[in-house]
Image (tube, rainbow, N blue to C red; front, side, top):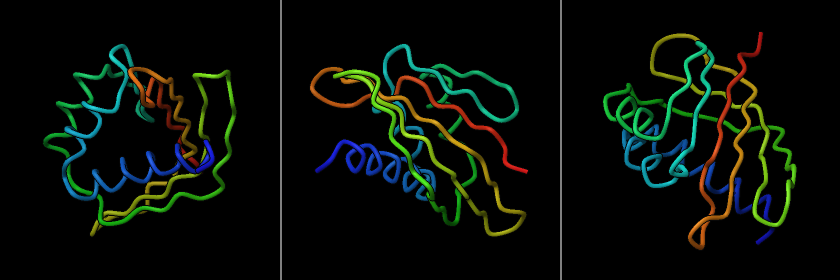
Length: 120
């Protein structure tokens, strides 16, 4: 499996967890110890805050990842950049440019930094 496919599978697993209501558990395990998420509202959350906030978050009904691009940053770091579209049962689509930077830790890939930029 290529690095791009490996990281893309992690992104899909994360989105599936958000659809299934298990995002808190998934990101609690997958984020690096000092990992951060930068959200479209400007908030910056550490791993514990992400896990807590996702435990009670409304589920997404569906999602789509398009235009994935890989940026290799070294032997043990890479970023996956893509357009993410998520839908809830009611309401408008959420469409954003997303960047997930992973580092290799403890034998696996861990999410070190995730950032969303709302698309017009």
